Image (cartoon, rainbow, N blue to C red; front, top):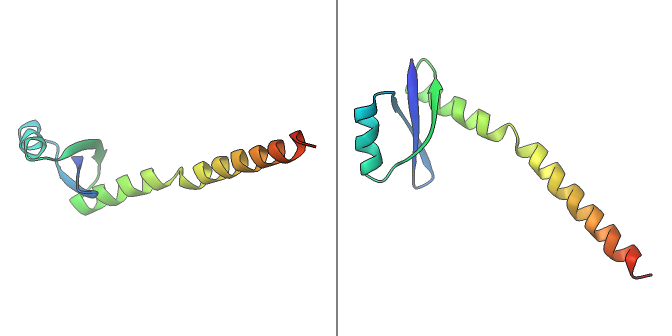
Length: 79
């Protein structure tokens, strides 16, 4: 079954993928995040969270590399 993942106040909510129901939520202040296939609403939210967190370690590593290279550039360019 497909679910729409919606977000309001940093809280994710899964609803069945019906456009009319989705429009009601969007009109009440929710924002659209994604469409997910899952068995239950809880599984849909968990699936979205796992997909969101999958790239977090890679992003942290890239940011740290940029900081290290910038620090080396600053230290060795002024000598």
